[in-house]
Image 1: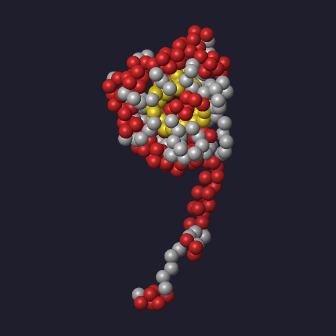
Image 2: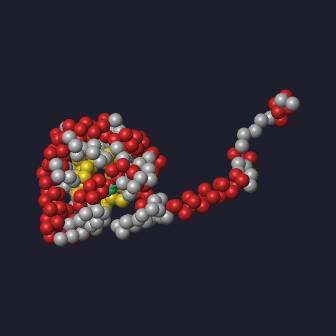
Amino acid sequence: MENQKLTIKDILTLKGKRKITMLTAYDFPLAALVDKAGIDMILIGDSLANVVLGLQSTTEVGMAEMLHHSKAVTRAVKHALVAGDMPYESYQLKPEDAVRNARRFIEEAKCDFVKLEWFDKCLSVTGEIIKAGIPVMGHIGLTPQTADKIGGFKVQGKDAEAARRLIEQAAALEKSGCFSILLECVPDKIAGIISEKLTIPTIGIGAGVHCDGQVLVIHDLLGLYERFTPKFVRRYVNLAPSIQKALEEYRDDVIKEKFPGPEHSFTIKEEELQKLK
Ligand code: KIV
């Protein structure tokens, strides 16, 4: 049962029954652990840019990087539904590019659905991708790819007018056929109103407990990304110092010839060695 692949229908039926779990992953070993933990959905987020590639902005990754990492993730996953995050300019410029790029996530990288961020012509693009048979998760609130257009990396929907816009965007995305909506950095009560109004599940990050599910960036949860930790993150373990300590022990052991030991080495019979002399 644990290894049985989830379906979009399974995710839809979880709404109102239990909270949906989602995490990012970008490579084979962490994706395998996330999957073994029974997480429902795995996102190869364009946060790849920041937490894996050390870039400043998610706008700096493209289809090549996203597909490369998506393939590594889907090789590991047996149970969770896997999402490819459509990178900047892979869907905003022309609807036909959007469909072609979404299809690459499904056909080449074996993802199950795509996620894309809200922008002014978003609805026609989601409509075309869904028409092509590809499930879509919409992403509203703080949309990092266009953060400069929405006042920066700030909580969205903090006044009645902005909150109403978010509620309308969520409803429009549901109407266009999205199977779920990601809400990023939205006041908890607004996320609650949206979650109640929609029949499809909402997945929150920095959007409070009333969402139908939660997502986090795995490097934040594990304490692997030390540059910046947003307020909405709970760090379940702080791995960076443990990894640092192990690396320093390895360095010292090599220098002091404590590693490798005989148990890590291969032998040759003494008589064979003698033949060399
Ligand atoms: O790229 C990403 O990690 C995201 C988060 C909101 C989960 O989109």
